[in-house]
Length: 303
Image (cartoon, rainbow, N blue to C red):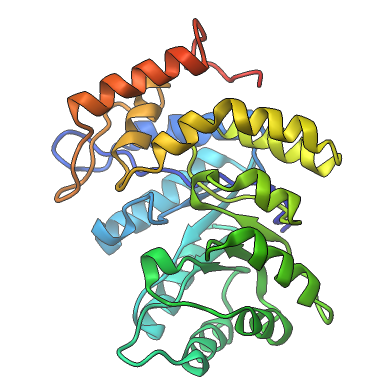
């Protein structure tokens, strides 16, 4: 699997009662496949994976793989504080037809990089799918050094990609690119594309994040790959207000945007997560009118 390009992280659709909305799963995955994204990721932080039962995960994975129908790849978040539980979630994803898994370490009482390496090493030894190693200290409270990430790449062949979200991302991406001498794997940026232009200029290979307009990220990534950084910057600057507004805590703003795009039946956030406030919804509509005046956002944009 090629991990260069744009891989949106998908929200998990819920009905008003908190149950899975599988019809919206079909719409969401189908829309992304129609855009031509390089793959989608489900059950990440945006996917509220920590609020889902195992049987719901199984249902969501199976439905997403079926909706993708081979038109795009499906990456499944499989992180868990327990190594054996992570292996089990990886096996579930493999059995249900996913193409790769995304894994991040969990915090331990005493920080220990050797134990983090063992975590990835033991998961990889269990005959799992290709692994996207996620470095996201804001959510995991685990700070992986550049030397540790390089060791993971050098010594664990099943790690096929690194998703770098440790700040400052451009500096770390540049250091990882320079340090990958024995073996090179793609580097993807996340964080809602907040630093997307700078990460691409530093050498990252694409996006793995949940911005509600992935066609914009595709256009930015294509421009950067063609070494047209002026065009990449123009697009980044144009959509930056939306990118920044989406970065508020929680997933409510992003879910409301996906609802406005006609992809989610409701912008339901699973309890105890909060729905979007009326004031934030008004601000969001105002930003949309300023950035995309008169544009039908239910259709694919032409950035």
